[in-house]
Image (tube, rainbow over all chains, first blue to last red; front, side, top):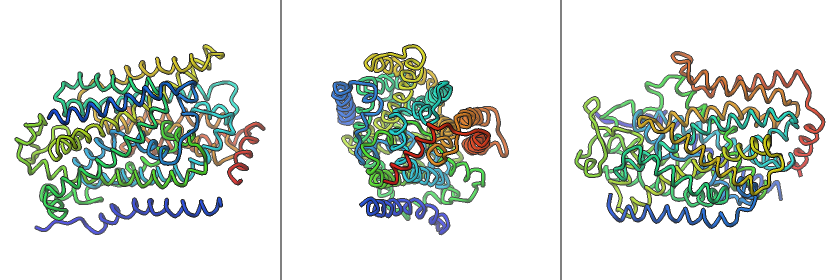
Length: 36
Length: 506
């Protein structure tokens, strides 16, 4: 039998955490431009 | 263990001790010893917060949990990563500014006393008691992790391993205080991350690739491949709730207070978040591939290294799943690299334990000794009291860790909930709500801590399987708000609050 990680599990494993890195990049630039 | 591994390991540890000696010469007063004189740049602050936070937990407990139960334990990672990000986003800058406005507070009890203009010292004493109780358990988790490392790497008995670890950690915390801790944390944070990325990559490629790994794990236990299968709502909520704990961890938020400038927070947040998430993925994949690797490898590989494996439901598994990362270091890498990875694990443990010892010792020196016994104690005297307290607390934590069946995850989980539920809501409300009062904060801390102790130690089954953080955090929040609504903050408190808001909007 072929085994694989389901799409739903892949979503939870690989979306929320990288999203936080992206958010930290966005807020870094927005806050920097605000303080300038 | 090979001679090369041993030499690399020892050279590394001596290097850390030398940093301690160097920083010892630069430590002149308690602010230096506890807070490094507010001098941290963004990278050092971020990695130091990460290394002191993640610790042996990231290298032993999380891979161990994934090894035992599969990727469903990744909910823990999601909860923690979210909590850490929110902590950087909403707490770091405000707390940095507020602690300076509040008469230059350098510890959490200090901040709470100044924030609530508490002349009775009740807040200081209650928060110092919470710190001493829960940090003793937290420190103990680090001692257990250190003992497991020395036990599985050097073939020492658990008890010998434990006390050697205690000696190493205390030596350099004792010497250098905060500056030594943050600088070694920085080096250790970098090394930890490299090791966490390298280990699963090496294991997955040794296994033949990602597809082969998933297939092998699925054949052994299909539930290991699912985030939701066989996992109840209570378990998912409990794992995610770990994230709530961040707002109240004294050893982490003290890093925010020690930053050079509040303007450095956005860069530190980016570095900290990225470091943490890469580390979490490393730990998750280490446990995931570890399960298949150990099951399929020849038992002689492990026995040659003195690693104990047992048969469970017809599958070969590690006797202690929390040692999977240590096992990988020994069986997958060149002895030199293995020595570095083992040193990285020791580093992680040291960086957390020393941060915790430091916060605990400052509670003794600042809050009890100076607060009650010697109001006019000199800075030099306080540094020495802090150092003696460091040794005493380490000894008590060591004694708690003497049970060889101790699990890092259980000890961390209890202490994490204790701090999160006692201080978390108070820190958040005190930074965002002008109307919070001293009585509200005091009763909130008491209710949060008591709930964690009762729920964690005396209740189990059904809803009581929910992580004690959840009831503790929310009961604290409710009690603080209700009691604060019954009173009014005094003028000094509101002035400080308004001044902080002004500073933040400059």
